[in-house]
Image (cartoon, rainbow, N blue to C red; front, side, top):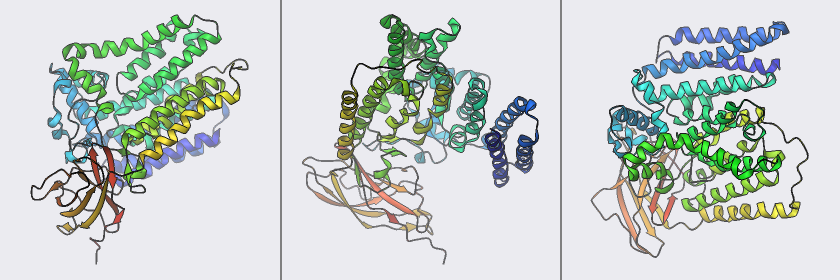
Length: 545
């Protein structure tokens, strides 16, 4: 156990040493860096020297040190920043501003959010039909919960500040509910760069994380009724709030409902009544937060909350889709990946039913597998549920006796194996049969390799219908930046089995790759929905001779 708390203080030390390189952002880091470094060194020594009777006090001090380290490092950076790092954060800020002025955020077009982003085209969420998202695309809780802070005067990068505070609140929850042998998890997760950087600089998912943790804490108490009556209601209500902030928590709702059904059946509790009460408590905060906007403008609200699922967003992220977006494979059909994700969810729900004793406390660790497969699987989707999963596994009751399902093992494996096999088929289909062939004929740079210059592509339509391609560049691991346009007003469509050579202009401020950096071109089509890429190239210009 001492070794684990040593890692906590080592993380504080590492944060301090890393702060030395940020003194150009804020001169106060000249003090903060050495202070945190010294605190980490003292903490490491103290873990091994302090008597065991002071263990609890040291643990509290360790957590406080971790929280202060996050605030002292990320707070000044936010205070001195002038722009958001994601369109999601900028949109939430703009939606909150409109709401407090009495304007319906769902009815607004968010070109004004350009004022909240430096080089806004670097951050837009683009679509396969050559446009970008300019509407609120989250449930109302994403800006309703930020509104009180806005009214209290937190206006400068308010979304980022609220998300940072939400992440610290999540760490407090994990620390409070963890048993003594696992309290070290909280400060370690709090300091982990996978969370801290993302949730402090544009990762708006942080706002629902504390609510997911409350939903996961002893979720079976709703059936077991081992705690106070009011505490049993916190879980489903918190789940409803989480679902009111973003769509990502929606993927957990079927698992909670199936789990409640299994628990009710196992303990002889009326299944329909118990499940109905749980579902009603989940729905209550979602309806309360969103109903005013439904009444205000039903079509605008409906379009907004379903936009990520109904609009042809470009494939992007760190999941399976990166095989295509990074050029290892040269095509991806987004709809096939969406089908694969849905089939995986079905397989995991069946596995949850059939192997309940194993998955009762740990099923939230497997939910990211569902989000690894779609055509948009950003890194935040893959790590968002980890803190709540720890809360679940540390607080939920084990199955008290041997579970004896009525279905034989071979049948269970067949039931789960079928959607798994179909998932594999969908994945193979997703990366097969590119609708268009691409040949890169010419490219170059300008302004001493500062920006990309015009390039020439030859595109061959291999389908039986006319297509409208849209071209983007991907440099390194970066987000695609804007659409390239035909240079001389040539047609933007290609007939069936037709070949066209285009000279394309880059979007404004399209930075050139550095010398020997990897890059490729993407060609996107909405009908058929597909992304096709060139091979990966290395940039030959810009070498400092």
